[in-house]
Length: 261
Image 1: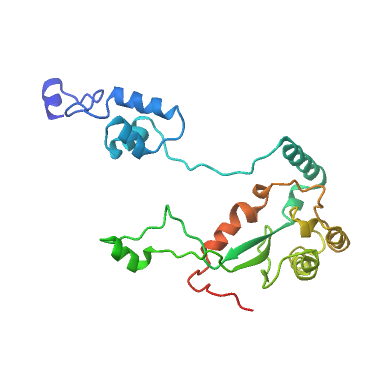
Image 2: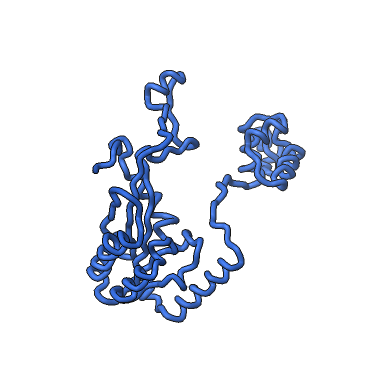
């Protein structure tokens, strides 16, 4: 820059100062861009294939090509029948619900937990000087072949979440669902919204049983019956696409050792 000022009286930024690039050349950038057109590729494999460091590959991707890494999203595989049923409920809600009424829907769901908890092998790291030291610091996560499991039910709405229902033993059928879950949902919904709200449940067998449907019809101010809620639609329920994950993060899995009978 000092030489530019001495010779021309100003700094010319059209070309970068310093020695020419040896790795992030126009040719290398072109090769990386061509690799990206083929689909998914890791920076490690990209660097190996092109004979450059991983850091250089990352700089080409981010600085020269303006790319950012994104994780692959997992979503339900929808058939044409599923899509038609989604359109049906969308039109039904638009016709029968005002915007304020959609805020009075109590979404519900069940989820199975096991005492092994959750462990992210990609993100959870133990920093240590050696593998042995890492193991002593908790670097080994033991998982039972047949872990003990427990099923829970939860309701959620625009106001808050309902009390948690824990199924201590056995499986959930329509009789247990009517006896142990639906009264909790009814009491919570009436407490939060009064007598003007709607109950939602998915297409699980205990939910679609004719006695369950009849109980919902007779007791809830409003509910989305089995003919309206579309199948294979966890992404339409906030519990499935958001809240269950947050719920798991706040559990102290070190204390979850045995189910209480």
